[in-house]
Length: 308
Image (cartoon, rainbow, N blue to C red; front, side, top):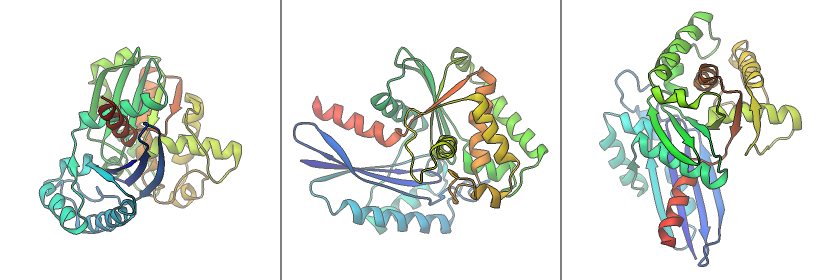
């Protein structure tokens, strides 16, 4: 028996999954933890990780280290994504993390992040034709899937945190702010030519901001504290209505909406703009939510390599 600890250090959240793998190949997750470290906070325009965010992140990673160290025969895979990827002080940050936590972070490319998203989704929800969209804190990954194969993939350096900081008031969004943000995202998507091949396809939504849509609708229907949104479907009208409600709410009101986490309420409008804009642009009529993603992709690759 062995354990695989996967750490996903994103721009908004740090996540840990510990998976117990039996000798016969059977496996189960024994730990799943998330901390809202907001690593990319106030990075722009210098692209420098700021000390308060670094301190929060290191404290979180120390906790992760203490958690997975309780398990025997542990192999650790720790990856850092967009915020660390673009940081001018990346090396200093990586070295400090190693010194303070004994965790060796691997900074992966946007393309690798998108590939892991694809592997994670396909392992849990093998959709034949779709666009996978993972909106993080400082990047968004897009994967065009045809006949179960990732035909095209890309990572763009815009996500919930940096879009909010660049375009929106964190409390109440104005019409002019929303117009400028939407025009920016439309221009980006229009320049990704292969997105035309995804017209009318469903979007498989990953990332905390996108999943918030599913949590809002599921909590509204089931009125439960914890809800499973895996494979939940939502149409464009439902998504647009929720987005309009968020747009018409100030920060205090958004925090009170069931399904919106308090630490995400200030960036949720910026975080949802990419998926709403893309759905309208390619005339996609439905979203399928997936709780799988990068960490699941890493696990899938690990199991495949060990099987071979």
